[in-house]
Image (cartoon, rainbow, N blue to C red; front, side, top):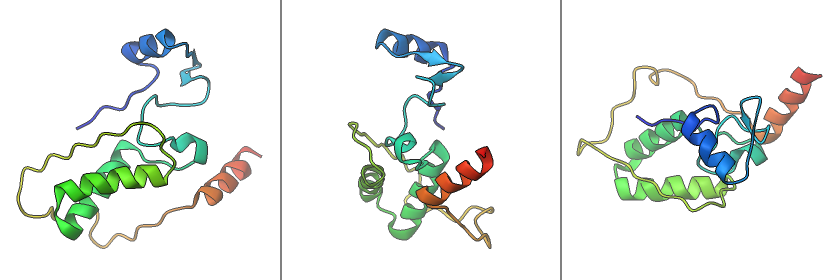
Length: 127
């Protein structure tokens, strides 16, 4: 229910250029495929995409079902990942009960990779 801010969007391109930035081969300043996100994840190689934010929110609401606390936890997580921007989080909940697990979450083992592991993998693939 959100739209990623990509450099290829005309509105984003105009804003970037008006602020002195540039789009190089579809990337912001030749580096980023997205212009705005929670945290400066590109600097630390920590990804917090729109889907990551949704999954994070769902898990927190399943744990405690407190929307206000969930918003605070998202900001704290973004800060922990190195965000230095002003952050605003709005969570809209249409139900008073916690969300049920998604069908794709049931029986699925979640695995993640550290920033160091991601960098090592990137170097291996590029080399």
